[in-house]
Image 1 (tube, rainbow, N blue to C red):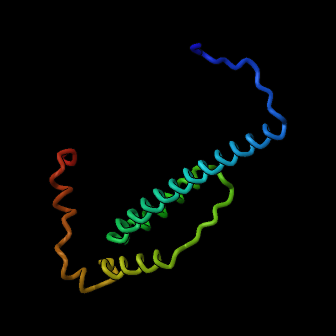
Image 2 (cartoon, rainbow, N blue to C red):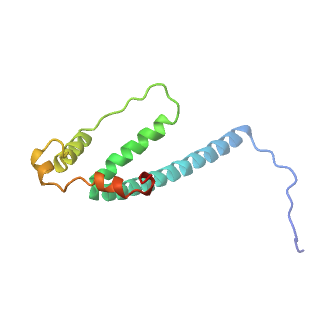
Image 3 (tube, helix red, strand yellow):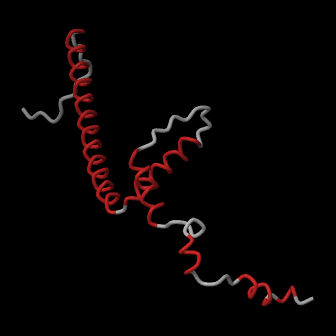
Length: 130
């Protein structure tokens, strides 16, 4: 005797077995979803770490990123925008102000600077010849 094929036409499982199989399948799907989410979090943390290293090389980069975030939030047409003002931004602005004092405030800088070029430029314009 030789058997070629076995075919199952109808299988009846007890309800408890069906529920048990469904719980097992749901637990497996939930486990896979958690693994996928954890992997995504790991990848995101690595990218954020790389971005932090890049931004630490240029102090203005963090401030520009903050301003980009403000623009993105403001574009959502919210009526209220709560903006934390980091102390680092104040320090950055203070350093920038100390590095480039305005010429009008320092009399020595105004006297030592090159003479104004405005009269020569106005005489050189062809439309003023009349």
